[in-house]
Image (cartoon, rainbow, N blue to C red; front, side, top):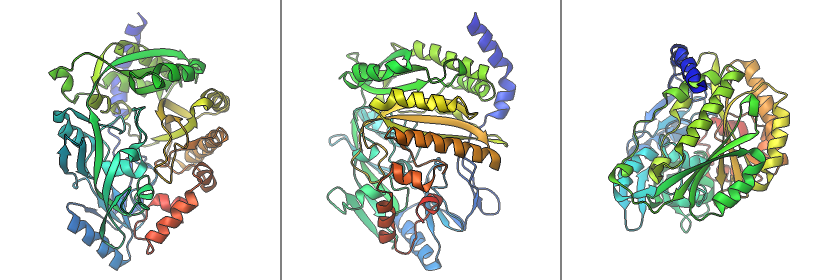
Length: 478
């Protein structure tokens, strides 16, 4: 009965929610202003130039050099800290530099230009029954952007994205093109990957692929303090488990107390032609409505969590291909509002710190008024490939969706709360992710990333004229 009541309430709120919730796109504003997906850092730039081919890109960089202009690199512009632009600078828009150049089904590799999206790659490799090893759970991001933040996803058997890169070509600050791999120009490899576009333009890349397997979905719900042992036994140490995602409750009735888990398990069932099709129709209507309610009331958050609980339970026993697990689930979180913004933060803590970390975070946040909409849990293996390494151990990642006002008072409050949350994370030997709005201090970055100074010194050594600059560098590197 209560489900009918919930659906009725949701349908009654459809008109207001549809008006309130639109596609949250980064935009080019009037009078030479640019913005990213967070809409908190509008900046006046010189111009945007669409990248189309290598010789043209080389000319753009050399011309900017001659004119004394800085260069920033943009793909889908879904980072939230001004990583893709800088004041009075030139922005290279790589969305048109997007060809999938070669699929090698024997070596299980793909060569692709950096402006392509992961969806572009999936469409090219799916007919060969191949899949990506590592990427986000959405196909909408650009390859170059994901490499620049060293993305991670649901796969628990591979490291972060950098581990799947064989080589890439780099357009350097002097306008030349070099090849970078573990044996060739190897000193640059750990700086450019996870380097936030500060060393040059990643042009094309060869990525390792794997088989597009079929998985059976298994779901579980549990108290938060049972989750680490459950994960180790049923997921990490279970050879049948390949991918995983969890969510922890932000509803007031069960705040940081309840977890649900979705596991993607190997199966002996043969893949059908229908299974192999890439999902294109993502049904997000009711989840979007429910999330809309949760934005403004505690009861809405309780309802949204209960709906998720029952929805997750209904997935158990279904089958999904690897490629489809790595496709979009983000449409229900799309948001646009004049007064408010929707931002992400992400924290990482070692697996064995999960319970005491959650206890400390809960104790702190219960005394605050930060509007937290969702927390997703992922697992990331230790990464030794990159200098700005967020996974310095085997870590749980907490992807946090937050809503707050765009006015300076609201931003300051969010900054204060998130800085304290970051301190708690650091106290538990954790780190945080860098692609988002710069709430954290320079000192917090150095504590989370002990090689920060080394990273920025290498950037200045390699790019002596300061050609490749963005707002992230301005905030933390200058």
